[in-house]
Length: 120
Image (tube, rainbow, N blue to C red; front, side, top):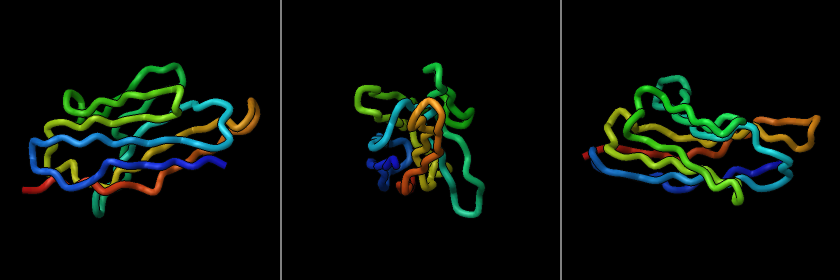
C-alpha cells in the first residue's frame, strides 16, 4: 500500500500564491507518473500538471505560465507552485500517483484532496 499526503491548500486573494506538496510513502518500487488534478464544484476532475515516467512535465493550458510542478525524487514528493491565482482556480486539488510496487504490479493512488479557494 501507498499513502499520498497532501498539504498547502487554503484561502488566498486573486493574484496571490500557494504551494502544494504531496509526499508518497509505503511500498514503492518506482513512481511512473505523479502530479496534480483538480475538481471544481459541478465540474469533472481535470489534469493540472504531472510528471511523466520519463521525467518531462505536462501543464494544462489554463495554468501554463502561472503554475509549476516540481519534485524531490529522493523524498517521493511533488510540489505545485501556484502563482497569480484566479477565482477560476478554486477547486479541490488531488495528488495522483501511478506506482510500481514491483516490476510486475502497479496501482493508481489518489490523495485525500486539499481545498484551494481564490477569493477577495
